[in-house]
Length: 323
Image (tube, rainbow, N blue to C red; front, side, top):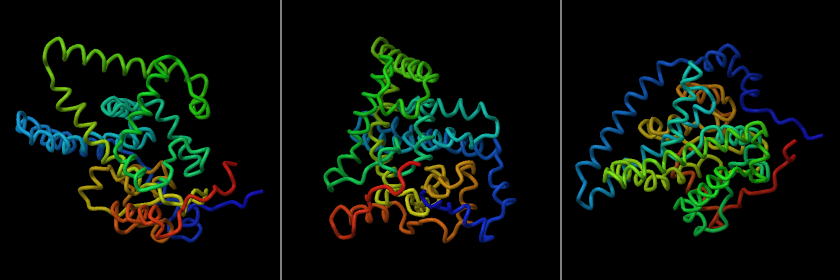
């Protein structure tokens, strides 16, 4: 029988660094903080969207769309929180906002929820974690992943499969049979709406979705791929939650942009804690989680050091399997 591995939360509770009352308070949810944040978020999208409008017709439209796209792809961070039902106390608001975010970035919300549940259950375990991003075998493969071409290729295949009413063997591991129809119709509805928008654009010559939505998302996705690499890649493929996940210390504007997703270790250890309480939990778990003090750049320097052979690779066989 594999030895039980204590989580940082359990250790902190046992050591008295965190009390159960404090943890319960951190888990308390409220609609207010997210509504306030969304107001600023929408204003920021208005600013970057205005930059695209002002630059239209010049070469500057491309850097403007890239900047706008960085915000657009970070709808993933909000959708990720909605999967956990933590941004809003009102449960249905999490579903509504999560589905809107998923539609904006091409990530079906219900399917993502099932997939992400298994990611939390089997974090970093090869063959079990459906969201596992392998440590690349070379710097070239590292750059290829960041390009987002592999991501979009997999997305198109996934959409096509679900529209046709088929589940891959990997899907069947985490999507319950009773949810197959939901996943299929979710993909069909999203694809149908995208197609309807495209037809409308062609018929009317109204190309705003292309310039303010689709192209910015394509341009911004490599930034999201770059950030997603910092969460687990380069950490050991082991069950020990003290080792398999990074928290990255970044600036306040970047933390706002990522909806505090940079506190990724804390989130994995207490997924019921809303994003706005993660900074407080981070202070309570000081010394109990793995922290990259140099932020996203430091995480990438660590990954590159492993790829270039300057430090041992972390992708060792998972300990203890998935049991």
